[in-house]
Amino acid sequence: MMIRGVRRLAIPLAVILAAVSCVPAPATRPNAAPTTAAPTIAVTPTPGPTGPTPRPSFVRPTPTPLPTFFVYVVRSGDTLSSIARTFATDMLSLAVWNRDRYPSLDPESEGYAPDRIQIGWALRLIPNVRIDPEDLLEPTATPAATGGPSAPPASSTASPLPSTAGASVVVRHGPRSVQTVALTFDMGGRLDPALDILAWLVRHDVPATIFPTGKTATTTTVGRASMELVAEHRDLFDLGNHSWSHPDFRDLDDAAMRDQLQRTEAAVLALINVSTRPWFRPPFGGLDDQIPAVVGSAGWGTTVMWDIDAIDWRPESDGGPTAAQIVDKVVRAADGGSIVLMHLGGYNTLDALPGIVDGLRARGLTPVTLGTMLGG
Image (cartoon, rainbow, N blue to C red):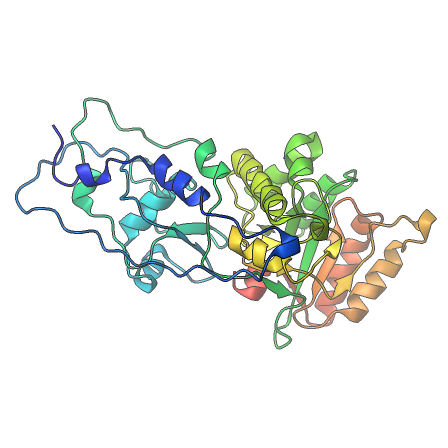
């Protein structure tokens, strides 16, 4: 027998996600106008009838179908409670909407820890909406599932999470008033020193932001091992999206851009349960007026460029820099808020790192992640 509120939530969550993924995409790039963020629709569920309700075992709820989710990226100092207050919802609703992606938010799990969220988590939420606790309970003879898988279900990772944030913000450096520098490493193509570079960063407690291509990160042995190191040291590493196969986004239509981003996000989440949102770095640094609009609408709110390029992707035999030249360029050019572009497969990058870090610190500049520098 159904109890109060269940009929209103009878449509499965999969229908919500399917409905969201069916929102028409912007027109393809040749004819597309700049994308405008869709307005957030505030909906308050109608209260059910009053009266006593039995409270048997807790089972996975099916939220009321709603037009769209807003995607909020956790910043330094956030708590689940403070986010809930900001968006006029509550902690239970946030936990339910996000437990498929972050098992520690699952109220059914023994590891339920809503007080421990991480910078960079992309939380789905609906402003001004709260899930009625009466709608979360339903009699069942089957024990409730606990813990949840380490990776979210395929249906959640394959569906885009729409954002009301509008166009992705293009960032070439952080605030010049800070005394920090963001070391960033792209990963794709050559991989020989990748694990050694990450291990050096871990041993010396040097924060960095990693931008892998999805194909390299999840279909190669070195790529998977690199992602596992990132996942094991979330205090040191932020993770961004560098596309699936490294095409120039200026050559893609809107649907192809979204596919590159979402395919990478799904594969990385399935491998290490860490989101690449909100950071995106365009392959080849390729940008035009339409790309930030499409990337932002897909849920990546910051497009990260750089103001210092180590050019470590080029070998010395082809005119590339030596380790000493890399150190000299980075240390001399660095300023507060600088974003340094390097590669996990870079030539001479590993040998240059000690001199880079020591040189920056000697100038009073501290390496940090993008999340620390930009507040994401």
